[in-house]
Image (cartoon, rainbow, N blue to C red; front, top):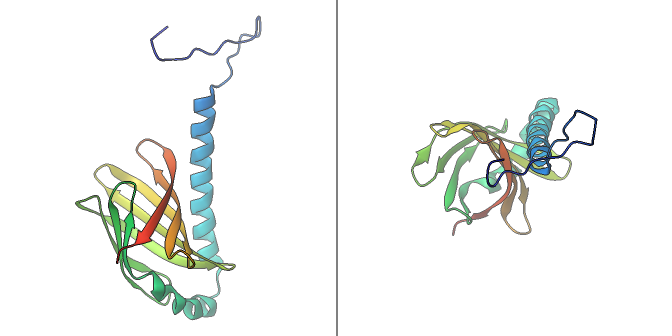
Length: 158
């Protein structure tokens, strides 16, 4: 057995191995990230056009520079159109290509989705909810290259 690798023991005579805790955790995190992204994207398509245009006025509060304090990452939301499309830039600290970004109303919440496609960012996504009381964006970052999800928060830069 290699050092640092935990071997799972099968029940005597069963001939099968149970997946380890870490494997189950990774699979659950990937499923949760995919479900959150699908929920956001499907919900956006299902919204009536008139509702999206009316809600678009409220989306202007998202414009500005947002800092992810745990790593110094910056999301710069430059504009939000009435259809919910966001013009954004992302920095780590160098610019990372934002392939698509959008915002949609889900019940009382304002959901923000950002997808990154660049070297080291092969479809990484942010799925977040705007919290007006804290003026923050909270949600999940899915790191596609390692297939892991992380709870994150962005705060507005003053």
